[in-house]
Image 1 (spheres, one colour):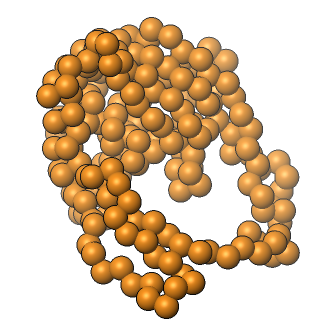
Image 2 (cartoon, helix red, strand yellow):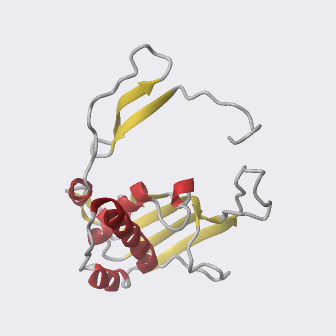
Length: 196
């Protein structure tokens, strides 16, 4: 995109229902009737309720960094994504969005939640740094939006943190989330997890 960088045609947009994990509508721009009038907005409490019902017990979880993760605490070759840091990032993102768009100002359980998150340990991690340059040629070529990609496995009593991790999948974490950075996928170890 941008001036003289080619053209594109937007053919359709899919409406995805986060509660049902399915596509529920389609905006087709080449059709004569492209209207979609179903309200599929979801509240934060609805998502949390859904995620709390998924598992009764989780003791091992894998977190994959799908798009580069940038955080202010990086800057070291010996950087680790501690579980507490991951949870804090999701909670801060959630609080910022709730404050900016919903007028919600208090999240009183943050300190206790972060204290308990400190008990979860890293079992295995495999991260690589990947530089990504935005395609805008009008900017200085030194602008880079790189970050870490890879996978990390955590172990401990993760059950209470599962809804927060799942929200991280939806909200993304770290810096430059509006560019698509910080996308994560979380998967519990099926052998050690109990469904409800």
